[in-house]
Length: 183
Ligand code: SF4
Ligand code: SF4
Image 1 (cartoon, rainbow, N blue to C red):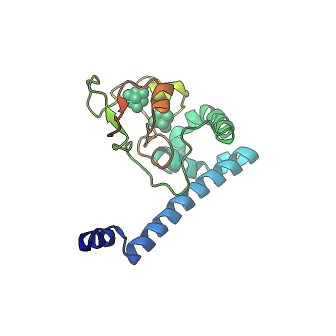
Image 2 (image 1 turned 180 degrees about the vertical axis):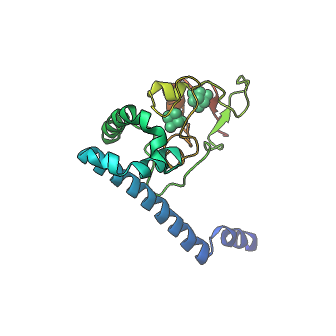
Image 3 (image 1 turned 120 degrees about the vertical axis):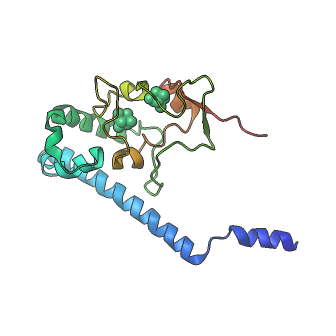
């Protein structure tokens, strides 16, 4: 009995830790809200896409120097409208809760690297998932992601891909497998 009580106490987060976690969640939600609001204003007014271009450059490419990517603007604007359409249709899978933590890798309690994948943790030059959605942030020549580790990459679907078999199948990913569930 005493052991159970001790174990129970061990898993209750302290009050400061719980408050810190709530503040973190608020921060993540606020960052997503700001991003989606700015994108919505940009898409609905068009001129907002240009006015906020330093912010978009930072969110997508990790730099405020938006002029470096001016050549990408037409593709990017088309992608922004297509993305808004799919967001409203709830086509993105999975949809990410506003309060979810940003991630730089998938949840390894859910997925594992396919033993037949020969490149370890690297995706090498696969780029299949990005090609499937015709992402304008994928370099055409090298298949490299220009948004790697950016705000957009960490806070939305890319950094945490994949989390389900449906996602693996949808993008025909050869690298990841769902972990067998222990019985
Ligand atoms: S990983 Fe990069 S290139 Fe691929 S879909 Fe995400 S942002 Fe686009
Ligand atoms: S499909 Fe899989 S292996 Fe290919 S780039 Fe995407 S995550 Fe990497």
